[in-house]
Image (cartoon, rainbow, N blue to C red; front, side, top):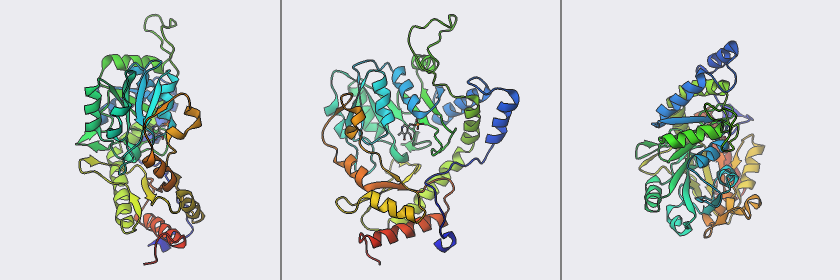
Length: 382
Ligand SMILES: Cc1ncc(COP(=O)(O)O)c(C=O)c1O
């Protein structure tokens, strides 16, 4: 039990390099293929296409750039509106604003913290071009309902799978569902390239627009003539080498994450008054981070997180709603009220969930969480 782990610092997440990552990186260095050309980029993109059942993949420098490249790919232009959840990272809104578009926020669902499909239709206007669905904390958004609305109103779907490598809904893998789909490979993600991202599509024209935008909109045959302005959002061969080593391990990683998630679930289920991540019947979640939310109106998340920190346990707060961000004022639109997002921010946080977690470490975290909640009078010592 936890007595084995006295006074240990438990990080919220640490990457793990189990496979060929070092071998492939050394090969890049030995052969001088260190920049944005080389066989690992091709191999990583093609492995990711296979993993997500996609025709085309465009590797990029991070998951934020991936969203912007995706939005450009489907043709988001000044004045276009994209409906998205309020409970997500600012990257989602920034991608649209950078192209002159307007992010439109709606509230999320109680049980998954994903965009609430019931809120989408009232946010649609003649300027709406797309819906961005974000699979939060590794649990798929309600794709079937979102697709129905998108098809009815002829809207595109941008699918942000940054937190959901390998998650599934109705046996369809996340990253295969949107007209364009994106991933992040930041160090805390299921697979990492240090920094990195990927955009996927089955559409040849979207793929060619995205490839151009990632690479300064150079044109084949007349390289330094530019019809549009892109960015340098290229991934390097070294990053792709790490990514290839990681994706070769993906089944093992997903299994480990699910084992940690289910072990937490089993332990935390016993604490009354904690809202836990559900796994809906038609979904396969990857428990990217193990999330808990306290009852509203009592102690807030920060109080609990600070006390856990004193016990050496690292946690992270939930997102603050995008509708509350001063930086987005005047650049975005909010539709309806946001009680679910606001409660999640005030009362939610996530626990250590990385690849280094063992059952002993989870036991330790749960024991310390319980003792903090007892100290604060949130639960009884029974
Ligand atoms: C849902 C979501 N989308 C996009 C991103 C952006 O990814 P990156 O940090 O690689 O830019 C993140 C980052 O964690 C994320 O959680």
